[in-house]
Length: 242
Image (cartoon, rainbow, N blue to C red; front, side, top):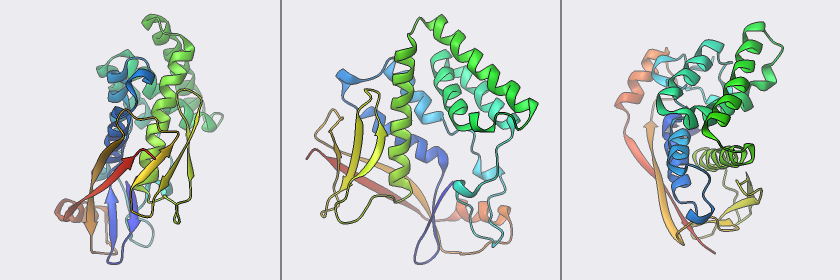
């Protein structure tokens, strides 16, 4: 989960909510420049964080505060394998993109264990097999995954409150076209992206966030219960073409 401090406690955004925001942003992309198999790609983006089940995890810091995902412990091979396995029920294209996401995040762990190495090898083999079966070029797959990464990163910038002050630009990442994109929040609160990659000149996206007034918790079970009872607020961002 994504955890932001507030004056009275914590703002918590579930990882699956963040993924849904990424899919909302993906759906706004200019149609003529959209990646291969757009709607299946949207499904991959919206489900790429299904690994996270905050209601089942140990989500407290040593001090008893809700744990932001950046502080979480390493994910087990078993959990990664389940994410890859469950993606297959949405088809090979979704499986391919989510497998590439798993590879990107975990290749740095190669050499830590034979189990991890075997799993990472299987992901690369599966990706190549699915790509050939689907008859899609490596370039198109890489572009679609770059699109997925771009939407994921933009969603995190919004959810983690990373927008710079004073109308300064922040790099998002390179898009599916290899172009660098930057984001900026104007003094009136509206947001723009340069160069403008979206279909419409203005649109709004949103997420639900839990508003916790309790600062410390005795157990993850107590945190889970508090999240289920917490007031829900809607966070909105309106994008405009400059």
